[in-house]
Image (cartoon, rainbow, N blue to C red; front, side, top):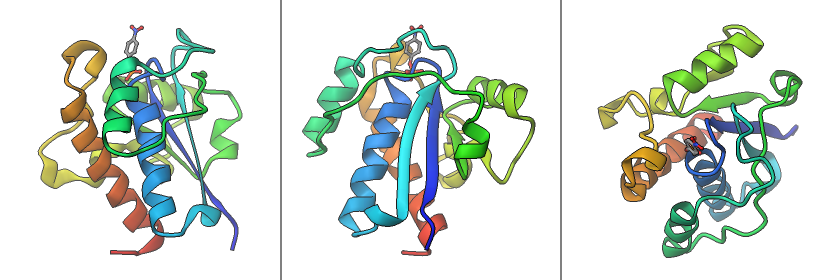
Length: 155
Ligand code: 4NP
């Protein structure tokens, strides 16, 4: 079976999308599905290219028993819509920028919160502004779990 490729996208690629990348990879590994799924993350801005993820994201991942090693921030690339099967935005600004770059492709490009309507959130709040990495982690975990179920039908 061909690997499914997933790209998580936020603005800076240091807070939310790296968290989603590492949480999703962790959940995938726990289910023994690592060989079926490829995961990465990127920012629409490129402002933090080459940097590690934010200290708050690092701390939260470690606290949850998720190894945060090996990350480097990068920007969305023009070929990403061809490379990836799913490109998952954290908020409406990310989504608008992705749709500007790649066109509207609702089956491929959508918001993580679209998968968790029961959460009551329509975007993943940015801890760069809120300082609340716990809230972001809760949403990212729930969204990542819902994505895994969507992709694998594992409940
Ligand atoms: P992220 O958070 O998009 O979740 O990585 C941000 C990180 C940095 C900035 C904004 C948001 N910034 O303005 O540099």
